[in-house]
Image (cartoon, rainbow, N blue to C red; front, side, top):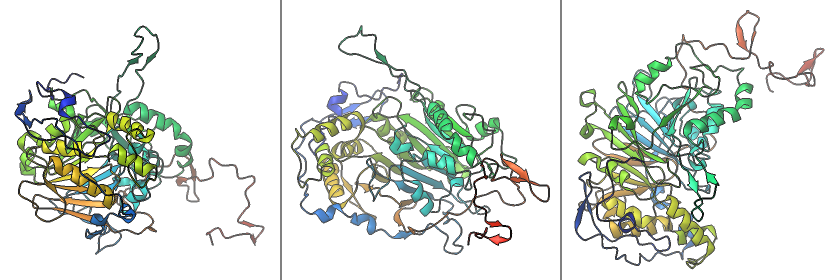
Length: 549
């Protein structure tokens, strides 16, 4: 990657700067001289004389079965109290961030995998947010979207950090069933371009065996998904899948400042809900031409989303920064924006730090992944009552996963200490929360950065931090940041419908027939053989009622 911005400090190796241990709860000590990046931003050096790590208690099993902090938050009701069939309004100057999934694999009953829903502003005429976005959609999150009153029509813009299943597993569900719901327009999927990675045998450079490069970009993934879902999409195409008047491709590109012309994979007509549109982002671009890092920019809704490369398992993983300007008069002034960063999964690295510093302006909400140390992770996975030894095979395996992919809690605290000014709220995510794991993580983080948890006023110069949990709602304005917990029904049905208002009429479904008025309507019999069907009524004898009763 051509990284002309040079985000490594001179005279200090990455190993020295961010040395992490998978077996200890410590991390890196802070102190020593000040060093300067070539980009001109100062960071505190450290001595590499790491403390042994805090003592964490695992002797109270009940603390592993609850997350008391989340339960202490005030409830958030996702429906409008005055008109319970509509969306809970946002303030005109507010951003709302909802965690629909918050955990690392494997899936926990209490936490789905990663997904964040972001809404900005409020359109009083249409009674909905000015704009809204999905960041990742891991396995199981659609149930939480439905419970939080977010229908498919509000999930048409999806930003993927990378192509692991815990970040895109529910995209199949969103794509296949969106048109049967209220998404009657294309599904847009932003994500990284191909990795370009080539790997050769390190012991035998002349070995002809070579791995890569593979067709592993977002467009490749979407193309394969479209093909895999053909039976599903055809079978439901006796239903309405589009409305007339959808803007053409060039208009969408101009309106959203997309890096390329939005082009569906497959053979679906432009504007159709089964049109799957990948927007590939060049993850190699950073610090050269800032305009090349724009993923989405909307003049009307005043939202800009940029991307930056991070370090996670394979080249090509990215993070995102969303900036929203409540006032048109302040448009594109970073100091006037309400801002959020979502790093996706990453080892500790300097791009996230640079983005959070934001040219000295800082950000409002900094969402960064964190994992428990390998010893704790192995203890939990193996259902043990105490930490296993460092030689435990589970510890060794999880350490390799950590070293390829993630930020353990001590390193997270050190990374946070490098960010000045501090984010107004830092959110640790991708983390298996419970009272015991969060308490232990907080001790590690505090070793390296003065932080506090809670909604009240913390110590002077301290960073406010929280751990995400499914249905955590964070409402952000320039005046305050409020954490709440979604209060939902486990037995709910469909969320508020978001269809074009009358007199708009849908286009004719793909599989259609004439009704008695000679109008084209969807034909549910077009794709099935009814020769063996048990009829509802035959020869005036009622076998069963065609109304379902």
